[in-house]
Image (cartoon, rainbow, N blue to C red; front, side):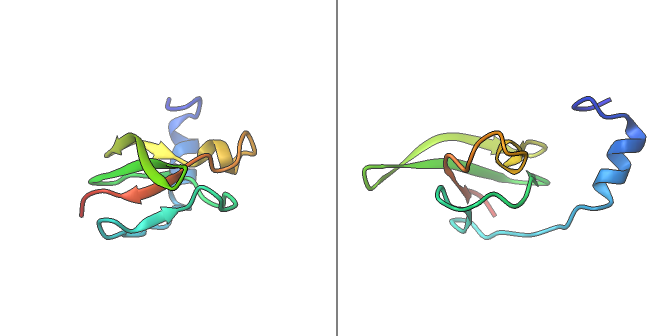
Length: 88
């Protein structure tokens, strides 16, 4: 079981996923945008960045297997930061 879901439920969910590739430095979503997707990192890494009075401030990095964007999509919160592809 993962995140409260049984294997059969996870399989059904994973069949709906769409694979997207981002180049290093490419923005995946911006801090001000409306949430629309949940992202799972298949390989490489992304960084979570906020705009600190015009200066980008890196808060965290997510590696393979991590997901992000879920809180915003579920309506828990708006996109609180931007996410940028870190490695190719």
